[in-house]
Length: 350
Image (cartoon, rainbow, N blue to C red; front, side, top):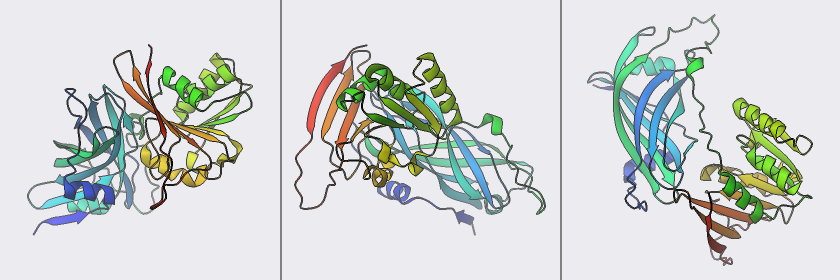
């Protein structure tokens, strides 16, 4: 009898696996995205809640960014030992690029090792099957299936008196979210679409290297704030602020954007996954009437945009989309007819 323990699998991933999710492909002859496992490793762990990291190389040949929606995995060790589960994904692979991302899953270490009949402190030979769910604007929700074989180091289990080890492979840890900078010409279009003036207060949620608040301050003279949870991005943003001599106008803070009070802003800029835009709706609903929200590439399900601008770069033909919403948000409700958004198509230079 196979010894199988199933860890929590998200509803989205289950739907993808059961339905197959073969959806439209509007990428011409560019080819399909692919994924492969680089390595699997334990990071922070204790005998109960442990962090299992998956370093995955994703190749995105499309002309649009490729958001990752989640990972489902099944490990086997021989014919009678297996374990399955899911890992969160919160990353975007830029158009026409190949990136390694690190996805994390929380597992019960003792259950995981027991299910695979492994021994703490040894290396386990495993075979793995993986399904990476992706949700790109022009490809739809689908899965990238791949397999891998390798060795997974099982850390020594701690005694009850020991503190959890937070140093295992920490030097090799990759960010859980891939930083993808918005091209400068798209930044300019976002600020133009939001009709930024010197009297505005701009909040950039997930500010990366700070280019949006820095550009807003330099070009329009407005107060701008950048928020990010990654210390490396904060460091880059502060360097950008100093280099451009806008410290009097730009403030950079290391904060979780989902805990922020956004009522002090009247311009919000975003380059997040669609699911994260939706998660922000309760905070965005507290904005003052007339406040503007602009998003690079990703919409906000359930909320009608006022304007959509589709941009094609002259340099490589990369496609971008900018969405504009104005507070109060226009919720899409059954039986309620809303005016369609204004849609524009433009070409941007190098």
